[in-house]
Length: 252
Image (cartoon, rainbow, N blue to C red; front, side):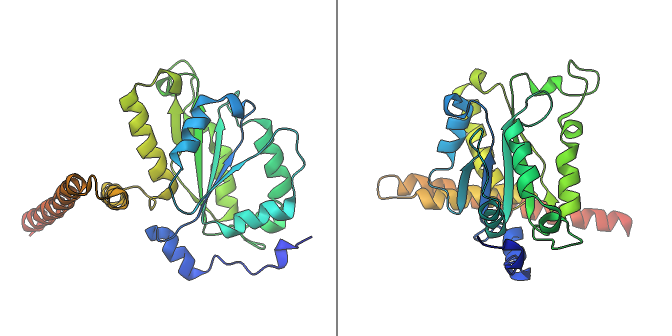
């Protein structure tokens, strides 16, 4: 059995810098779902990863004993860790909790000890059967998603990880085709774009994906879209510079 605590942490400064700019970043999607094989939402999200580079889809089967060394090795090899699960009674399914208890040992996880996860990113993709607007103070559920997911923020803090804004998927079965298309793009960006998902980062990501899609049949049409997006980015940067100059003049 491999003793991963003796493995040199490959997440050095160079790789941390790569992860920040989205250069060959490797993402691990850890999926916990009691009805995984019958879930239309998980099937959709799984298909959304097809064709994406550096993505590892890792489903946690029910009632299984985890190979701790192998699971820890997966964490070591990836830059962004995603916990993906349906919201069950304001928490994740028991399988994910069991995985955490077995795999995230103190010596392996704590930033002030071995700190193997330090500097990596932790994201949450959670699915809801109720509208997301119900999860806020004064609404039906009474608590926000941010409040419910506090334990994962605490985990990221203790491990020295960067906690990403959660991606919430609510009522997938009621989504229109346009809403599903938006979800597909949002999900792919969540897995592969550089955090913090600014407008500029999202735009660069879309241009990059369009360039990958270009082929002999639709090359001209896609090139027009790419050119327009790139021009919009230039225009936006010019606008930002103008606003900055106006503010400096007013302050002067």
